[in-house]
Every structure is written in structure tokens, then in C-alpha cells.
Image (cartoon, rainbow, N blue to C red; front, side, top):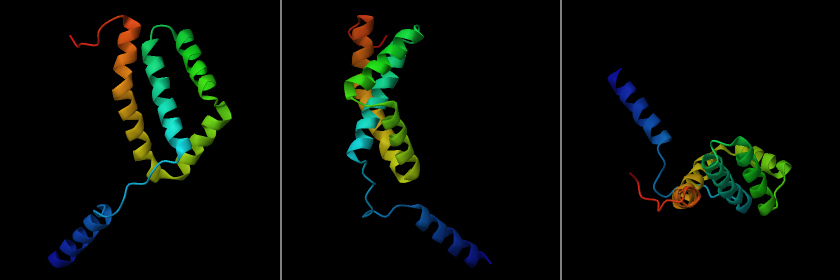
Length: 117
């Protein structure tokens, strides 16, 4: 009985773990573009947190600047939903973009030099 449970648990662990040669799936260029746009949208929302109208206008300006329509955004979301293995790379791209660009934009908007208190 113990051997069977041990064997089962080892098999489950091996199945859940990625092998070292298994590469993380890559985002398509459209998904990567959407990840950056999503991060920019979140940064704009945080920058104008006290003024929802300005936040909405900033998000719409970002869409217009990127030349994306709401239909294209929905298409990107649907594409990500169809391939759940792309969610991790998507959020990784969003986080990296937000970390490198988010604090600079908020600091510029607030007129600070970006140092934490």
C-alpha cells in the first residue's frame, strides 16, 4: 500500500513539474503588444486614480495611439483564453513592463524624483 502511494505521488510530481528542456510558451507578437498595452492601461488607471474620467480618456488615447480597436482587444483576450499556457508569459510581460515603466510615469505625473519614502 505504501509503495503504491509513493509511486502515485512520484508520478503526480513528475507530471506536474516541467522538465528542464521544456520551454515556456512564447507570446505571439499580437499578444505581446496587448500585454504592453494592458500594462500601460493599468499604469494610466493608477496615475489618474482620483479622476475616473481622465483615466478613461488616457486608456482610450492609448488604444488610439496603438491603433487597436476594442474588437482587437477582445480578440486578444479570446486568444489568450483559448491557450491557457500563454497566461503565465502574458502576466510576466505585463509585470516586467509595469515594473520598468510604471514608477517612472507615476513619478513624472506627481512631480517627484521616484524615490520611495
